[in-house]
Amino acid sequence: MKKAISILGSTGSIGTQSLEVARSHEMQIYALAANRNVDALEQQAREFLPKKVCIFESEKYAELKQRLADLPVQVLCGMEGLCDIASDKNADILINSVVGMVGLLPTLTAISAGLDIALANKETLVAGGSLVMEQAAKKGVRIYPVDSEHSAIFQCLQGNRREQLHKIILTASGGPFFGKTRQELEHVTVADALNHPNWSMGNKITIDSATLMNKGLEFIEAKWLFDLTPEQIEIVVHRQSVVHSAVEYQDCSVIAQMGVPDMKIPIQYALLYPERLPCPTKHLSLTDYGTLTFEKPDMETFSCLKTAIAAITTGGTAPCIVNGANEVAVAAFLSGKIRFLDIGALAQKAMEMIPATKIETYEDVMRADTKAREFVRNTIA
Image 1 (tube, rainbow, N blue to C red):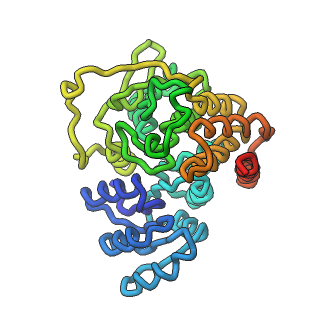
Image 2: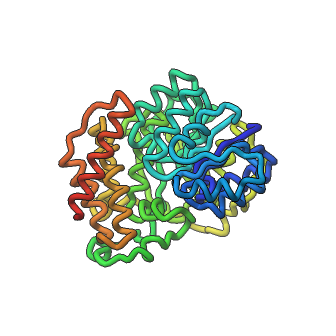
């Protein structure tokens, strides 16, 4: 069992569930970091008494420092604070659950320090997958997937030889708009898009699930995590979210990982690997579901998925460009500046208009990300 944990993104959905797992197994919390939620971060600091806390938005730093003045805790802020925590080897494992490109540098920092990572930040591998996996291999750092789909694949690979794998099957819930036509999606509201049928997630990830970009990003992550070609990854829509993903071996055997749709299961597996202990969630009853269904995704209606697959097939900075464009487009949709279908159109246009280049350094990734964001902002303006 890991003795001490640092969490980046501790007040978000993954972060709070990670703390629930830590609480149930009496794990030590070494450091916590949040974006701007001072109230929640203070409450967490008082319960878990970490050695370090970080608030990313610098204007909240003075308030947090004042609130925690009576505790023996070091208060940090900004990217410097995130990287300070990510490089501190007093923790046994770092949970990176921040949202967006802000997660890439802390991941690289943790790898450089030789700290194992429970990864829930999609952008780390989507934008900089080649860089991250190459450096992790050099440093001997283990990256444990926290996404339910990637955790499922990781679990299904245990006890089998990697060279015997034929393909993986990523399952997708289909989001709130499964079965809708493009015409029906013309006037989707933010509230409609945030109404996910199975999972409770942050706003950005929930919108990504509605557009199926989330599954496209997971497709890219899977390529890097499990050293696959795009042809070895199949996506199927599974509305019940009971089968979290599966693998097919060369002998045509398919092994799937199942469970109730609760992120505490993959979080705990990443933190306690290879141990399996009681988890603070419900047991799965297949008879409660009765029927499990599987269908092909509609990549024409949900163009984000098609664009993401095209990006990783192109390679280089193409996935980074799509990811950066999507982040800005989703923010614009949430603030009412664009329509739902514009998200996919902007991501596709950014990939078509911005040439993909080879990734050799962190700066290469950030340049591509900046170009994509500027392109979308200028297109919307």
